Length: 385
Image (cartoon, rainbow, N blue to C red; front, side, top):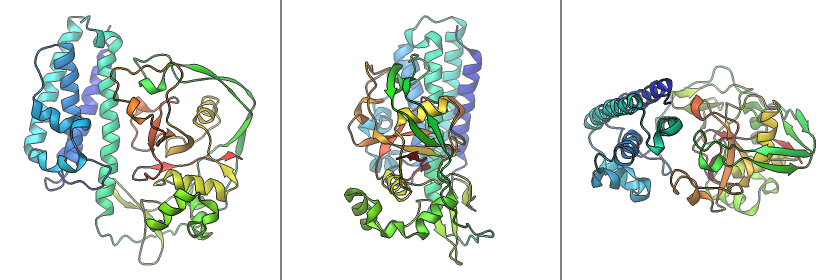
C-alpha cells in the first residue's frame, strides 16, 4: 500500500528546492561558485529530470525523455564546467520545473489510486527514493549558496570573539564484541548501506562530542598548520600548496577575529558548536595533534546506536576508512549511485549537518568525499589512539 503521507513529503521537498532556486537572483542561478559544485539552477533541473525519468520512462513507459535534457542533467554526460552555459533562463527553468513537478504528483496520485503493481512502486520505493534525492540536493545547494556568500566582500564585525579552549577528551568506552552494521532494507536505505552484517570489533573509546570551534582555534593558535609533525606527506603538500590556515568557511574581521559564513551569510562562531569546513587531511592532523585518531565508521555506527554520541547533527564527521562495499553488496536501483566511488580515493563521513533533511538523517547513512574536499560542513570526532 503506497503511503499518501510520503507523497505529501515529496511535494514539500519539491517545493522547498523550487523556492530556493526561485529566490536566487537570475544572474546567479547559472553561476558555478565552486569547482566541485554545479550552478544552483542545475540542481533543480536535475531533480525534476530524475523524477520524470524514473516515473514516466521507467514506471509508466509513457514517453522517452528528451535527449537534450539527458545531456544536461545526467551527471555522467554533463561536465560541471559546461552546465552553466546550457541552463535555460531562470524564469523558464522555474516555470518548467514547477509544471513538471505538479504533473508528476498527479501521475503518482493516479498510480496510488490504481494500486499500481509496478516494481518500483512497491513498498513506496520510488517515492521514497525521490524524497531522498531531493533531500540530498537541497543540502548540496546550501553548500553552493555558502560558496556564493564567501565570494561577497563582507564588513562583518565580530561582537564576541571566539576564545580557544583545550580539547575535552570525554571518551566513552565500547567493549570488545560482535556488532551489526548497516541495514537489510534496500527500499528504505541506499545500496551502500546494505546488507546488514556482523563485525567483530576490539574495545575502543570514542569522544562523546565532535571537536568544537573553540577547540579547533586551539589547533590554529598552536601553529599546527605550520608544523609538518602532524601531517602525512600528501596532506602537508596539500596544506602548503594551497596556503591552508583555517577551516574553509572561516574568515577574519578587521579586528582579527574569526567568523563563519554559510548559506545565510556571515555569522558569529559558537564556541561549543562542532567545527566544520575541514578536509580529511585537516581532520587527521587535528587527531595527530591531539594524540588521538579518527574512528572507523563501524566504530562510529556502533557507538551511535549505543547512545554514546551527542550532537551528531552539527557536522559530517570524517572517519579514517575509505568508502567501500559491504560484504554481498548489490547495486540498486542502478549501478552508478555507489559503485564508481569504491575507488580507494573516497573516504566515509558519518552524522549529518544543519542542512540535512530528516529523511536521510539515520545511523547507517554513509557520506563520502575525497580527502582534500572541504567545501561542505565536515568536521571530526576523536577516538582514543
